[in-house]
Each structure stands twice: as structure tokens, then as C-alpha cells.
Image (cartoon, rainbow, N blue to C red; front, side, top):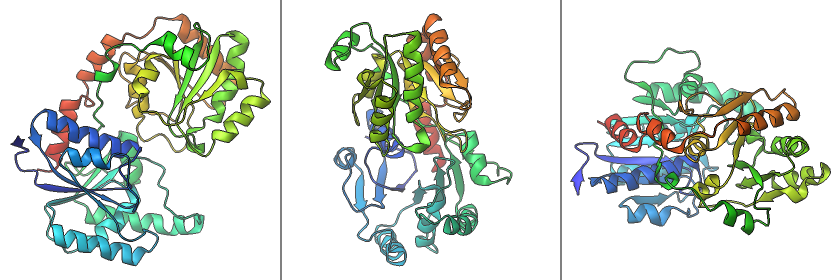
Length: 381
């Protein structure tokens, strides 16, 4: 297996190798490098002590997976334990993936010889792991300053995410850059079994599926999907909603569906590993995220386009994940659910986006797997 040509040993600091978009992207890049016969000397330092679903997959791809022996809540001992690992294993690159929290990892690496320290910003929420709003407000700017001064590079997953983290500071050429996730179009090359999927869920064979895929939490606003469904069924009785994901609002979604009389037309699937197949069996993809703060980068938005879905998006979704072939409507959350429902029917009555054209558009974009991998490795050189 040929080498990366000088990227050296890289330590990625992540929460855990579980279902998060960041961790899935990193393991996907690791697997793609192996397919291209590029050997990556990567390790993952997980800030949660428990094992993740992707631990073994990462190890099989040649990575080392390390779990912190100390809870991150025990801040001083956490930093000390991490520093001991850094001193013992000696990395060329420290790649931190926790936005403002990356300041703690930079502190652990202070004074150590490394070629690069990178802070990778994956969302624009700028939340810290404390329930105290006062602490969040007090700590936010000092932690930002540590990141900006101690890191050799600040990487954002979109223009909006990078500029939000910089907080009005101008981008430093070559140091503050955007790097898009690499997206694998292969699973979307063929359509799914639409009839079989509907049959499995106990739906009519001609059901029209409105899909929500992702974390079912307030910052994704999945309850609004139920409101849209109730209005959509008044216009198109075949419409149903499918939720692929899990989170704190699962029970609230069921209650809302019952209250609006659409409980029989809602299916909650939990987390699924076959999301490409599910998307390929649906008709619309909906993401009504609150408009502030905006989505860092909608990976599911890209995947939905590859599946040929029509997109219903709030103005909390930036332009970055939209390809030229996208069929979408972007609406205000202040617009009524009835307006969202009418937009869904307008999209349905128009031409379906071409999956082949979408794959071609992706291949020409920074999200192409080969280009994304090459750009990522260039960051380390």
C-alpha cells in the first residue's frame, strides 16, 4: 500500500466513533483511502470512555482507537490524561473536531512538538457542554481566542460555519479554509424497492413518503414535519411521514401526530444503517431547521439529492450542500404548514430530479470523494 506522501501521523479528536456525522465522515475517508491504496497513519482519541459502533471498522482500516480514561467533566484530569497520551505516542498533526471545545485539546498539547494543530468547525451552534447560559457566555470568547491563536489552521465545513467561528475576523489566507465532506454516491446508483419498503412499513403501495432523516432533536425541528404532514394529507391523502433517526423528540412527535389525527400515517424507524435505500424509496426530503443558528452543513441534504428526492428546506439551510441539479423549495419557518404542504405538491407536480445528473454534478464538486480526500491530505502537508 503506498503512503500519503508525507502527511505523517494524525490524531483526530472526536466524541466517539458512533453515529455522528463527523465520525462517519472520517471513517468513510479512511475507507476510501484504503480503496485507493493510500496508507493513512491515523488515530482517534475519543472523549467519551464508552466504545462506539465504528470502533472495530476503524481498527480494521488500520487506525488506532483510544478512549479517554477520564470523564471530560473532570476537566483538569481529562487534559492531563490526554497530554500523557500525546507525549507517549507523539503525533505530527493534532486534528480537533469539537469547535470551541477544541481549546481544551490544544491546551493538552501546549508546548509539544507537532507539525500542525488544526481546529475543525462542524457546526455554527457554538454550544458548550454546560447547562449554564452564564458559563457559556463567559467561556465562549476566551475559548475562541485560544483556538484562533494556538491552531495553525481553522477549517470550516461550509462558508457560513467558518465565518461564524471567526466572529467577524477576516480569513487568513491559507490558514482559515473551507473543506467539504466527501460524499460517496455509490450507494445511490440504483433505486430502492419502493413497493417492498412500503409493504414492510404497512403502507399502501402508492403512498407518497415525506422523509425526515437525522437526529430528532429541537435544533432539527422534526415536530414541524408532523404539522406539514397534517396539511399535506388534506391536499394529497396518500401522503405519509417517515422519520429515520432518534432523539429527545420521538415521544413528542407521536403525541403531536395523535393530536392532529395523523398518527396512522407516521412511521418512526429509529437509527438505520440503510439510509441510502430508504431515501431511494421516498418522494420528499424535509429539513425544517430553525433559521438561527444555521445548519453547519447538511450532509443528509446531499444524500437526498443523490436519491432523487425533492427537497423542502427552511432558511436555516445554507447553499453549500445544494448541487445545480437540486429540486427544492426553501421556505421561512414563519410560513404556515399549509404553505409548506403546497410547496411539496408543487415539487411533486414538477419534474423529478435526475439521479444520474446529480451524480455527475457531485463528481464536479468539492464533495467528490477523490477530491475531498486529496484536499484533506493536502491540509496536513
